[in-house]
Image (cartoon, rainbow, N blue to C red):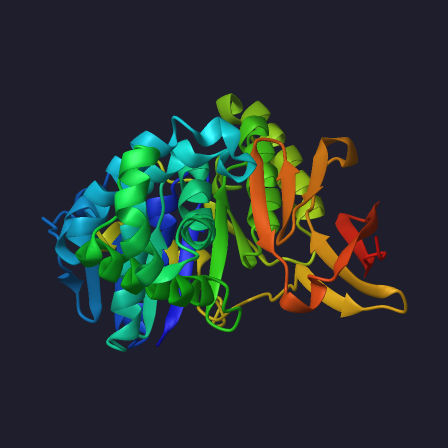
Amino acid sequence: MGRIMIFTGKGGVGKTSVAASHALKAAKEGKKTLIVSTDMAHNLSDLFQKALGKEPVEVYPKLEALEIDPNYEMERHYGTIKNAFQKMMFNMENVASQMEEMEDITVIPGFEELFSLIKIQEMNETGAYDLIVVDCAPTGETLSLLKFPELFSWYMEKLFPIGKVGIKLFRPISKKMFKIEMPDNKAMNDIEVLYIQLSKLQQMLRDRESCSIRLVTIPEKMVVEETKRNYMYLNLYNFNVDGVFINRIIPEEVQEDFFKAWKAIQAHHIEELEEIFQGIPIYKIRWYDKDIVGIEGLEKVVEESLKDKDLLKVLEVKQNEIFEKTNEGYSLSLYIPFAKKEGLDLVETTTDLVIKVGNFKRNIPLPLVLRKYQVGKAKWQEDQLIIFFEERSEA
């Protein structure tokens, strides 16, 4: 399996051109490269000026491009699951209010986008590519996509803890008494395969030796604020961010009076980004007076802004989720930069920790060793939420 780069950022900041420039650089260095778009508003075909389909198409020697259709991928591999889940979820939503852990059940029917990631994983497992570059949708959609494998795995564990034999016995009872239609045997087989795929997918996304996420931003106030939130949430879900790319910087040679105030504003926000993301490699990409289109346009970006010989490596590895043994029990440290103490919420269940930050929530399954422990206290310290576990007192 090869290297994976995932590019994300606010809509309109130039993610696609930055991602494609990385892909072109890799191909020019002799690496077999695939650039993939998971954004339903695909524009790789416009960028490369070539029609793209549901399978990779060569756009340059050693460089292929793919615009993923998640519905096509889902129907092709797991055709029985969608109908089974839709039937089951429709009925379960009617009783969800009685089940605390089903709070977010309504998100599951929209799981089609998950198959974009599964397609990427499958392409990676073939070993055909040295590098896969992923051009993601705007920030909010990307966060929803990246957190979904863990979330969906969590739901599958909750919904199918009794296995296929239990489901078979429970199916007639559930339909008659609870009006819930459980998946048939074919769907259960597909669900079992999907569960295994999700486990592999999570390992791929969190493999800090090969997979990293890169933030694309521009020096404007609203975009800088969203970039900070994006970085916070990516850390909450334990992803490795190894680079920040500040795009569309007006170059020094532009001296017209019209641009002076604009350049001063950009300089202020560039300084802010450099201060915020200290310790993370930052790259600056100049503004071009023409749209970046075609190989020739991408070559300009590579030659002028992406010269770093180590650019395609994992540039930064930060451990943002650490379990440790303490004198009293265990501790869990979560790195959540830019979060506010008053905006954090922590809930403990029998098997999980539920961390809420703003509008996002993550369920962290507790290791088996911690099942006999409980949260004793928690503290906020230098962008870290530190949770301490102590042995449960005997009732």
